[in-house]
Length: 380
Length: 124
Image (cartoon, rainbow over all chains, first blue to last red; front, side):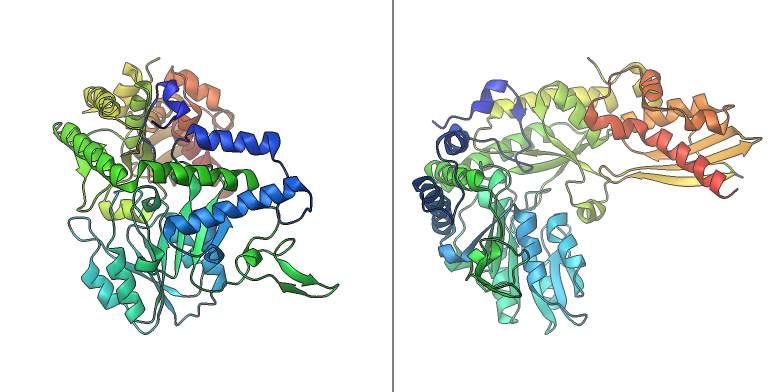
């Protein structure tokens, strides 16, 4: 049994797509580092610094093992957003170039591409809210330089057909960046099988601390920041840079949280993704069953959905839904979920969203249903 | 404490002064980009006073009730008086405690009115 101290609060936490709760092992790893292990990495000769460096690099190895990659392909960032920005910064797109994204993207996998000179092309959704792969095939052209695609929608929970998307792109000589911020917490990822060019994820959505992200890269990249640690030699007027991944990590990194991220990966591994997937499916189906029994509720249920359920209630705004849920100690997200274009596609100003993880139970959903009944009573 | 009092629900379901004016002095559209709330606002200003107001609001109960309540209150007030109204004034109108996360919702209507007045003053 894994200890999640937040469970003592009695809050029914159904906002896991925003961030997950942390197991005691993660919290203890942070405390242990600050109490007994504080030192900078890659610098000192003293034992504490060596220990901090070893632990920091042990997380890099753990991430590499977790996604079946090599440690030199793993760059520590502050989150998925920074990971994606590094890839955008590293490419010199021209006005002739095209970048394909999907209609499901979070702003973090859309806005960085809008800032490049390339033209954006968007894979639309079909009527059933799944990605239109036929349209995607037609969008791929000799000018397509990159496909930037989510593995799992933060709004709808849609699992995208990643392997097919990547294979088609590679056959077109196009690189692929995968936004795995949601996916990595619910499904195993294997870089040797999937073979994306880049993959971004965030520790805090995987039971780990905030402020740590990963950029997996199959290619050499251009540093976005310069300074200490990322250099090989520095003379007064010029410098040479360290090899990957060191040259991508300028300055003192987020040492404590990187070290604690390893404990989060160990927790996910200990639970096992088979068990997580089974649990996710049970809760999602239970929630769909409970909520669809109320005719006032609109549910957004694409095929291949996991762990996320967006909904609306007749006559009510999602912010009001979330406020009433909050009165019932049920934490859900409401609004546009950093996916304004998707809200326009769905034809709604916003949605309310429940998202699940391993510590949730059907009791959380039962409590959510009580809150839902109050929403209906007030507004419908 | 119950956020959704009868006052708020009544004004949400049947907002005062909803619609448009045929000949407004000034028109604005106010957005709350974090939640998608939107208010179309028309003001009629005569002798430095708001004489008529109409709004078409899409949004949550808090923002619509707040718009509705404040729309009744500002008719007959001078532009200077209205520009001095602050968040405490709105909280008093709503009669409930507004949590930090909902303050933007509660203040959207007043923000729209103030923008309209400032726009009118700038246009001289």
